[in-house]
Image (cartoon, rainbow, N blue to C red; front, side, top):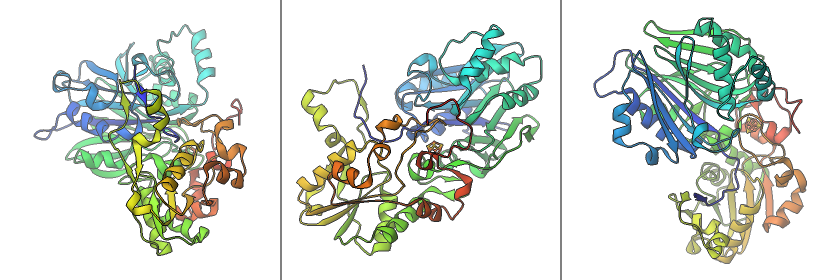
Length: 467
Ligand code: SF4
């Protein structure tokens, strides 16, 4: 049984990576490149991972539970031969955490074999399952990805592109989807572009990935982001772009910039590092705190803390050290270790904070339980004041687009007023970035983003969900 040091954060969804080798470069092999691609996207999902490969005739796959490096050994990669591959890292948002739900999903249908890797969440899964059930579809998993697979099978009398076109009309919600048949790689992004997906090249070969950092890792040059509602089909004739649904507008997930994505990624023309740094600068302008030093809750608060320090003129110090290797373990923690919890992951640097008025920057507060423990640790380490600043507005609403948020009543900003949250976490003062500040930090492109977990304004209808 796996035990986890619990983190009080919105949980990442999934990461996808795919490659089509038209003219394989020396030393480029589809499965191995995909391994490194999903390895670089590990932050987007740590529960399971998988790779599927096609050699033009048949699709083979391998998947397992755990981290990418725990699942794949050289012997597994060596058996995955072919020129097209897709890979997936998963943190379950719908469907339970088990191997049967791990992706890519590989299935046989009328026209051959298909592999699917999906990041996001459909909001009309129940309705589609019911409809497909009346046609006799059976489901082996509890994922919404299998609903897409069944829809493709349902339209199997059409060409793959026509089937996909029909699918795009049926499915609603957030999705960055990779589909591989024996002879082609397809990338699809939802109408609003909620979840990220970008295109790169290695020589004459195409790569698709959730984040541009994965392209950098495998030596691919960034070409562009896939447009909302766009389908790209890559085969021996090259790449073609199809549009079957109109995009009603853009609603890129703003939380990618706040927390989920790697700071070295650029998503939809905005660099994540620069966005976070600007959020920190904005926060300094808005909060105006008298203090001696600025520290970050690592790693997610670091970029914003640097921006805060820059704007406020206060020195940035490493006041909290993170054990980067803490994750899941098979060793059951003792009750005492459970209570230590956060300390296994973060430890204050007493020499830095002792006798200081500390500004502590984090990217977000979800339930507030971890923030409370960290504030207490900093005080115990000798800080005279602890001012908590948060580089995003209060998270008051759950996400229905593939992010695992707590239930609404568990979100501390939903149930408590600002002063009550301050008292709960035990800070001397508490400041959140305003919506206007967040908008300014995103170059005032805010109408192009989904910020529903702050505002409750969901871009795609969620009539059937609890708001
Ligand atoms: S609700 Fe929040 S986490 Fe979900 S897609 Fe919108 S911005 Fe991202």
